[in-house]
Image (cartoon, rainbow over all chains, first blue to last red; front, side):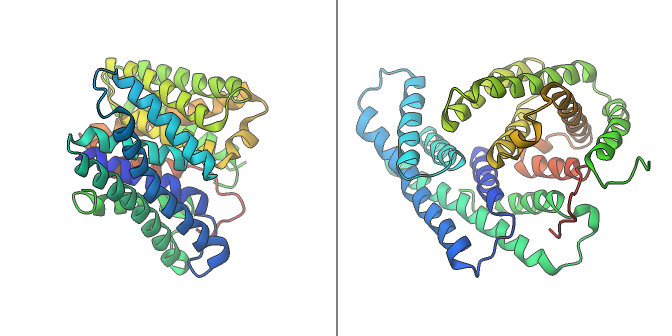
Length: 167
Length: 165
């Protein structure tokens, strides 16, 4: 169960990092729309990778495990390149698919887990950015400004996600 | 020069240089020095590896090679009984740097000198990790522990331009 928490919090944080400078939920063109587009892509690409595994390798159980990783890697890379996503996004969708596939033998569970883990990642990212925005006019001690407060917020969020949202 | 002001990087580094040995002693780990040396080599090796392979591969393949590289060192860390916490935090740091591309702008030139400085910085982070692990056993079984450690390490980072948040 801890793997979900690591997956959600680490990739949620990494996806939020490029948006942390001057992110504004009110700014539709520059901030909100690109983020929602990325969210939509993550929500379909992670289950799509699981689906790719079903179609390609479901009945070839004699294949070695690293072949699964490599083929999923290539498929995820191709999807991310075709949709013009960055490599952190690609790594997030790839790791979500791999973790979902390893979590259970049940295909329905695997597909659902991929979707909801991707949603968890996005929820973590949105909450982190929202909390950062809420803190914009708060009296933060000067040594904590910048990265320390961001990491601290991420730690608090990770604690909030513990056995809560993280499956 | 006031060593303990936090206006620029060199002062922050000097603070770290002053704090790290103390943290190392405080960590009370049997193999702290060995871990430190391994960490320096690991960080240097990672930076050198990426410096050399970056022109050859597109970023996703570079990321895969990073994962493999970290897995290799993760195994080594596990053999030494360190656990995956360090590898996870290193991955976070390197990926963050790699993501923002600022890393290559900052540390592209004077590679070996700045690599050494980065090694020392990461040494400090390792010391913090060991220290926290001794105080709170099992803290790195949770991502919040990693984030809190990174927050503690980020307290020592310089803040150029007076950022508001």
